[in-house]
Length: 270
Image (tube, rainbow, N blue to C red; front, side, top):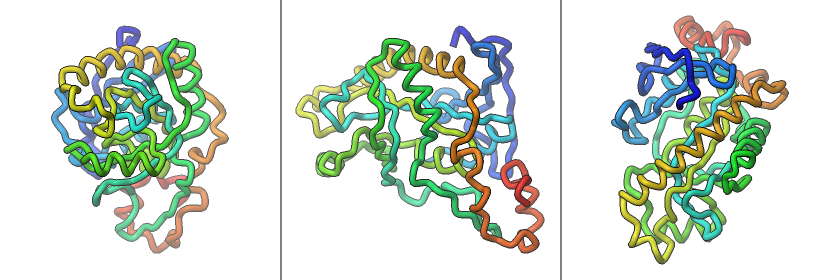
């Protein structure tokens, strides 16, 4: 992003391994921000290979309180056209065995996830998209599939019959871990194409999808910059105190190494 100044790269190590790439720290609209390429420099990691825990843990240790995720998606609705933006408010999980919690190893916590996106941050993103002149849809369900293959026609038709809106491969685990880390999380879903249910799908090429994504990314940069300019807000949302009543394990029963590893996340409660 041309507006990002005072740039520096910061490589982090976490108890869960290395994040996908170094974080790019900089100043945007007068605010300090951190950017992470979730698929690595050059897009080297499959969705199923992403180290979601390390990525979110790194944001937490950097002091991040808000995450705006920009993600390419396929559309499951005729009215959500390629080049549109969607700010979803729900998830449906179709992933298989991905690690999506910081907890375990002697420490049990159950956070609320009925409303998986931060409502306030999603409002900020929607307002910024509207101000930028994007065709943007508020609300909707993001189906998170395993991939890396795209859906079969039968699956695509089933998701439509369930009333799902867009489909992608990355965001669910990020949202769950962000909630555990008490970070506000919202998605700006960039529609690149219709999923395979659409009668014109067979005419879609990789080149067309990449061209749409590149053009969509320019709009996403404007939306993110505008949203950052509107931050911070008072974090009275459930995200900010998600762990307050979620930790079940008695403090004296938590292993010392787990307390140490998760100190940035649970330290104020244990």
